[in-house]
Amino acid sequence: DVTGHGASSAFVTVLMKQLSVRSRKHFQKDKKRQVNSAAWMLAWINKNLLDAGLGRHLTIFLGVIDREKQQLNYSYGGHFPQAVISTGDEVRFLEGRGLPVGLFEEAEYEDMYIPLPKQFGLTVFSDGVLEIMREKSLKEKEARLLTLVKETDHRVDMMIQYFGDDKIRQAPDDISILSLQTV
Image 1 (cartoon, rainbow, N blue to C red):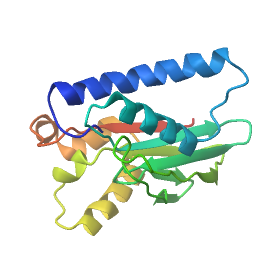
Image 2: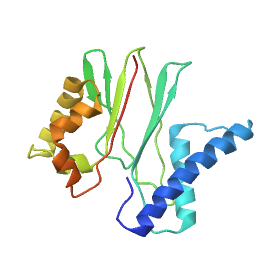
Image 3: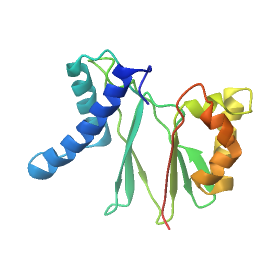
Image 4: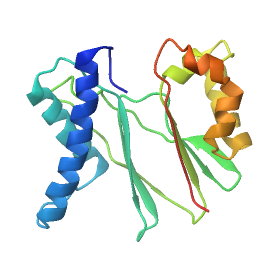
């Protein structure tokens, strides 16, 4: 989620896409170089954004699923609300926090690791979703997000029904929902 609006924010979005493509090509081509972890990747993105000198920053949740080890390595770069994971009957927020990306040279990011069962779901919401929720307090909104993910089984189309398509179109902030689920 890029801060601000307008051309400079749009440029940061394009830069993030370029960094994503560049990192994949760069690290696939040079097998000696590896993405060591999600936190390492956030630090790399942070450096590139600061070097670009755009005066914008972003919040990000970066997760890497290792299918061989059946684990998730993730890190937060100022992203809120936290990502939601479900494993069986348990639905919870993934722990962690970190500084926004592209704002502080000395920012450090923390690697978190969790084992993944064969069946799991992962949903990430942008903070704009909090602004259109009916609940009053942040605690109530967070509780509702967990319930919503459980009730909809991570289905974005059903979440949009809950929020209301008209609310999403007229939202004061960008709204994004990313949902992954094993079948």
